[in-house]
Length: 257
Ligand code: 0WD
Image (cartoon, rainbow, N blue to C red):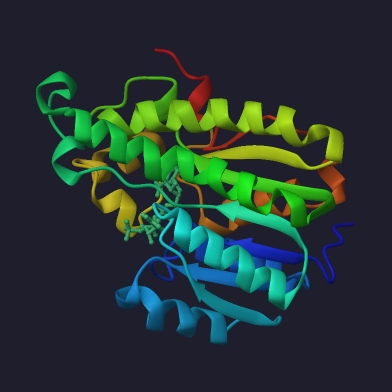
């Protein structure tokens, strides 16, 4: 049986109640996990607070823009004061310039856009691992969210595909760095799901329809299916698994023609 009671989790990347991270917060909270949720900026504060109020376990809300080392440092200090330790870190944030998430990859890419996408979508996971390393408990587990566009060319995903490829390599290197402390690091590669981030990708509706028609399960996945996999990955049920990318995508990734 899954046992997460009294574990302590930091969850980043909630922008609305549709966010993948909001679903993960709900599932972990139902399993007795105490939570810290973060919001990126003041615009999102009240939304994240509202989501926090509806959760079943103890929940605190702190600010953190993941592109700022200073913010990550403050978050670390806040959590250190609150708990002095943490068991679970969920990284569910990504960003790329909207104009680079459509059309021809080479025509639209820029040095600045490349840096921003990699910084927020990949380095921020490294930065959390680096900063929190000393207070993550033995048996701890870090999870990030990725997408098939890292491995295959997905129309309009463009620069985000490169950033996700970097993030997946990050999962392996972080797993190697933290393994001897019995801390595990994994990624969940989710099928398309309608959220704010997804609406920034041109033609996202077509991707949803395509997966529904072609995937082995002939349907799209749900927020709960991602959350349940994350709950497994942060629990002792997955104690032998680290450095992996687990697909929760109705099996779409196995297809060729
Ligand atoms: O189909 C999908 N929705 C999939 C999403 C399929 C496969 C993977 N993913 C990934 C995303 O790439 C992302 O890594 O899942 C993760 C969560 O995405 P989401 O739940 O789909 O999207 P959303 O609800 O928008 O939450 C992501 C949030 C941002 O939202 P907006 O839309 O405002 O950019 O990530 C946060 C932000 O709140 N975020 C940041 N948080 C802290 N600091 C930052 C930042 N600098 N930038 C973005």
